Structure formats: structure tokens, C-alpha cells
Amino acid sequence: MCEYAPVGGKAHFFFGLDRLFYGYASVLFEQIASSPRRGEGYEWKERLGTLTYPKAKETPQVQIPDVLANLTYHHMLDAGKLFGTVAPSPLLAKCISNRRTEYDFIFYTKDNFATALDLAQELFGTRPHTA
Image 1 (tube, one colour):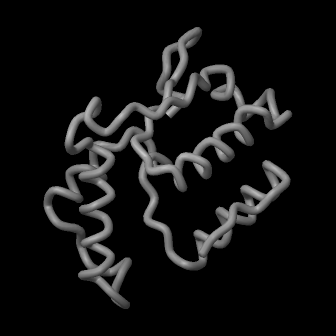
Image 2 (image 1 turned 90 degrees about the vertical axis):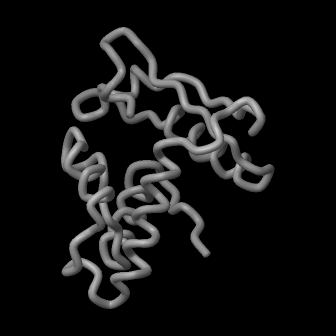
């Protein structure tokens, strides 16, 4: 997200989460913000804005990330073991085709999710906790 903020601008993050996830989001955001990694490949960190938690009644009822997450969730449920070979629904396909880069939207499998967790440990010195 930070890469899409204009140079000199900031990408601010808004989460309407319950108290349990509020803590997780806050810790993760702080780890990203305070990580000493800077320079080549990390230019986006200069555009990292603030993290806020507006009350649910102050936010739209349904937001685009919610729709994308729901479409993806149902696609994965419907595909089951055929995931990766079943075409997404027309609306999900439209969302995927409108991404700016291939990194904007990634389907995670058990294998590539494990790789992402390993990378997080390498980058931030800790592996996120998973259930």
C-alpha cells in the first residue's frame, strides 16, 4: 500500500477490529515501522503513515477489501483440493485483473504461506504467531 502513496505522502491504515486483533495489528504495525531495514527495496517505508481504529459505526458497512476477502474465501472453499486449477468467479477475476502488480493480490497455499512466514522472520527477527 505504501508504494501507491505519492512521493512525500503517507499511506495511513484504518482497521475496525475487536480488541484481540487490535493488539495483533498494533504489534505488527510497530514491528514494520521500527524495523531498522531501510534503503534499496525499502523506499516504501518512508511513506508508512499512521494506524488508527475508528469505531465500526464510523466506517462503511462493507469495504472493498472485505468484498475481495469474501470472494477469495468462497473461491477457496468451492475449489477445495482443486485450488489453483479452478477459474475464479467473474467478479473475483475482475478484481484480480485490476491489480496494479502481481504482488497486490496473492493466493496463499500452505507452502507459499510458510515461505512468507519465514521471510517475515528474516526481515523482522520474529515469526508471526499462527494458530
